[in-house]
Length: 65
Image 1 (tube, rainbow, N blue to C red):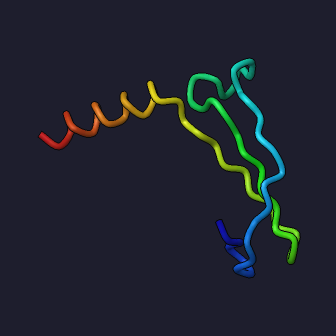
Image 2 (cartoon, rainbow, N blue to C red):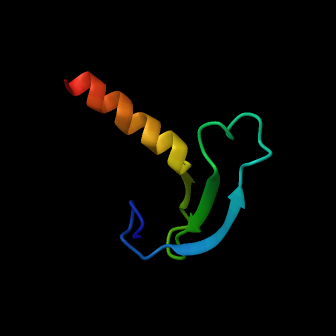
């Protein structure tokens, strides 16, 4: 993944599981931290667990019909 601001490839700085985080655990299960070595920008990417993704697809399919 490249930096949005300068286009440099981002460096992976770590991951955290959100299983014990009351605010996020029902929506996301992991956050990944990335950093740009050139301009210093940081990126947090949140991953949805598969059961949430499946539920979203089911809702969208119902709305489409």
